[in-house]
Image 1: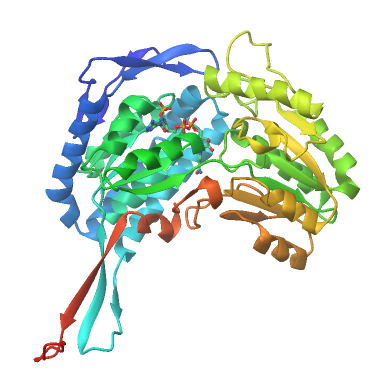
Image 2: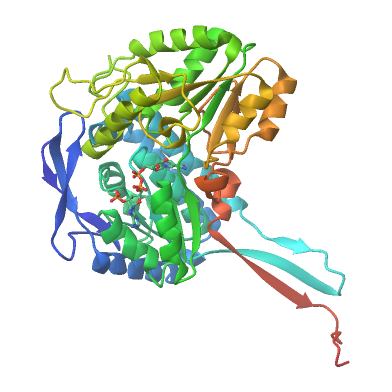
Length: 487
Ligand code: NDP
C-alpha cells in the first residue's frame, strides 16, 4: 500500500477538511506513513451534522423498516465479499495479526446482518390502562447520532455503533480514532451503492478535541455514543451537558479473571493467556487481573509464564506471529512505562520489556507479573496492552472481594467445575459481562456494557437498538364523554 492522501465522507461526498489540514496514518509494524487523511474541525462537523439532519428529515426517518433492514443486509454481503481486502487494511493500520482482523471482518458483517434482521422487529406496545382508552408506546429514532470510537477494533466498533443506529432509523456522524480511520473509510465507498442515502452516514476523520469535541457539543446532535477511555468519557459527559444530549459510554476495564483450584488446569492457563493477550491486550474487557486460588498459584504462574514466553510477536501480516505491534508510539510508551512500574511493584514471571529485534515498530513482550498487590498501579490502572497481573486469593469470599475492589465494572470471568460456586460468584461480581469457564467470546446477540465507572448504556443485541430509540406515549380516548375533574 503506497502513501495515499484520502478524503473523508460527508453528506455523500468525498471531501478534504475545510481547513485543508491532513493527519498522517502510520503502520505500527514499520512506523511508515501509509496514508494521509483530512484533519476535520468544527466546520466539517457542522457540515456533516447538517447533512445528517437533512437526510433524517428528508426520507430516512420515513424509510420502512424493511428498507432499512435490506440496506444493512446488503452492506453485510459487501463486507464478506471484501473480507481479504478489509482485513489487510485493518492489520496494516492497527497492527493486529491478520487472522484476528479476519475474525473482526466476519464479526462486522455478522453485526450488520443481525441488525438488518432486527430492523423489522422494532415495535411499540399497547398498554392496558384502566380508562376507556387505547394507550400506546411508540418507538421512534432519536434523530442524529454522533458516534466516537477507539482504535482497537476499528471496523468492528464502527459496526457496533452504525448498525443499531441505522436499524432504528437514525442518521449518523461517526468519528473513528485518529490512528485507525482506514478500514471504515474503505467501507464507506460502498455506502451509497448498498442504498444508504447521502448524508445518512458521514465519516469525519480527525483528532479528539478538534473533531470529536464539536460533535459532542453540537446543538443539533441528539445523542452521543462513545467508546473509549474513562478520562475522555468523563469529558464527553460534561461537554454533552449544555445541550442535554443522551449519552452512552462504553469505557475501559480492569477485569478479573478468577481461577479456582478445581478448574481444568490446562484450559485455565490457556484461558488466562487468551483472556489477557488477545489483540495485544488492547481490549477493553481484557482479563488483566488474574486471580488464582492459593493452592494452585505457584504451578499456575509457572505454566502461564512458560506459555507467555512462547507467544510469537511480529508483523501482523506474517501469519507465523500471533501477537502484533501496539497501535502507536504513544501506546507503546505507555505500556513500556507500566512494564517498568510493574518491575518495582511485583515480580516478573515473563516479559517485562519492549521487543527490539526488528529495530522499528511498536512491539512489546507479553508480560506476566505475579505476587501483585491489588492496590498496585498495575492492578488498578488500565494499561491496554499485553500486561497481566497475577494475584493470589485464599477462598471464594477473598476472590470476590479482590475482584470487586476496582472502580471499573466492565467484565469478569470465573473458572471452576462447581456450578454452585460459579453461580454464587457470578451473582456477587459487579460487572456487566461475566464469562464462566471462558473469557472474551462476544456475540452480537448478547448485551455489552459496564457497571460502575466502566460506563452506562448497552450495545449489541436488542439492548443496542434501544439506545437509539425514543419512546412516545399516545393516549387515544375511546369514550364519547371524556372523564375529567371539570365534568
Ligand atoms: P480515547 O478515550 O483516548 O479515545 C477514544 C475516542 O475518543 C477517539 O476517537 C478519540 O479521538 C476521541 N476523543 C478524544 N478526546 C476527545 C474529546 N475531547 N472529545 C471527543 N472525542 C474525543 O481512547 P483510545 O482510543 O485510546 O482507546 C482505548 C480506550 O478505549 C481504552 O480505555 C479502552 O478500555 C476503551 N475501550 C472500551 C471498549 C468498550 O466496549 N467498553 C471497547 C474498546 C475500547 P483521538 O483518536 O484523536 O484520540
